[in-house]
Length: 338
Image (spheres, helix red, strand yellow):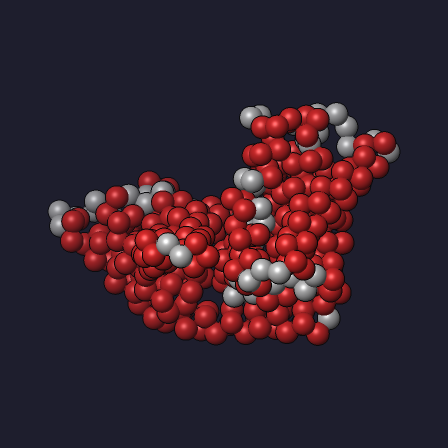
């Protein structure tokens, strides 16, 4: 048993939550952004500006989603080169048969098996990609359809519940997806996997924007303009280290999300597409997704302004000042090393 553990250690195979549910899932966000998400942005720009080359770019970018997911996940698992390159095929199979989660499962299995056989034979150039692709595609075929059906069912439940109970589900979806965005996992991958669109997508957008804009504004005195841009247009995940040290700093943006969520679902009837629902204001993908889903109109623009920017900033600032006055948040608690 000890020899086997040593072998796994030598091959860098780690059966941990960190490796599979944080590193691999987090890497999915980069794979999605470099393919499906950027493709969606170009698609929207192409349609609105009538630039055909943007539409072509969008098609190519979206078609690369599976491969990008496979490579990103394998890279996060520190795959050797042959395994890494072979993961592109596995990602395509997994994404085709089971969506992003199918790509995750298939690529994780394929990568770890590929790592075990890597450089163990003289025919490494054949054996390693062969094992990686064969077991990856088989996993995709066995697991993918079931995963796809479950994710579709669960996503439908969430979306239907939001339509039926926009107030309570607006609070719940906004808070949970917002928290997921700040955690070292991928809220974008979650929303895409669940096909979270419509009102549920709008609530998710509200939660993500509350975290990003909220933390950006609340920490302005510590981080100035650099922190404002890094968190407001980048990610609130930058605050994760500070949250570990003082979890109370998470209260203001989370409370803000619980207010902006039902405002999005009930007042502005805000909708989004799955690729924009879990991105918030990161690269303005969330607002672009809202525009793509709703197509314009005064109510949509006012909703984007209030739900994505103004309300998260004002509410989080107010809650943050209250917590500062009672001593729950102290000077320096929100400081980033930028």
